[in-house]
Image 1: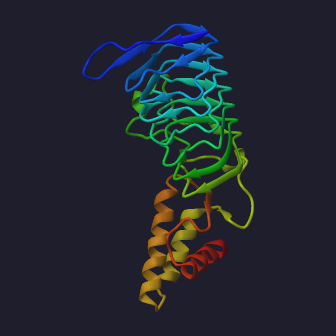
Image 2: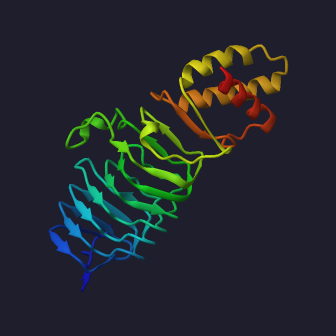
Image 3: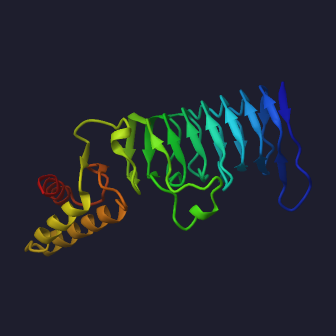
Length: 261
């Protein structure tokens, strides 16, 4: 069974979807804002569809297939929390949309295009990531400026049990109190993890300030500033060694100093 919808004629076509559905394939209309409000969808197939703008609020998607689905705008979860349970996002394009305040439980994001995905207000529990994860920030708390609008209200983002071991984290960050011990992180020489990161930055900063090479000193101080800024409310810091566009000799020296501090 295919689920087909038609947009009303307007300057900005928009359709609203509600109700309970089990199974079937959802056909996304072209160049239309598609709003899911209060839906309860199970086993619905969205795979391969192209959403010009996708919006969801107060909804639940269980065991739905979003593989190779393209999202070119909108958000996956408005202030009324939307939950995705056991959903597949393999090969999907999510970078142009906002995760919003959505909650993802046991979802799979293998080989998804997550470049610059805005996911810092979302919750992730027991999810699996594989492939390149580029410039994505995961947060342990919602943005304070927006948290007051979340329903149900929450002070923290539940973020645990997520498996990143097969992912390549590039310029991606965990901040605002993500418990790194509760995740499965990539291993190897490409990555490093440092506890007490702000104390380390202060100690190393005092050392770097005495460097005689002005250019190296300025680049190292810029690197330390970036690390401090991107580790907001985070004690443990996890990063890929070559993320920052700093000359390798300076970058490696700073990492070593931070490791030894």
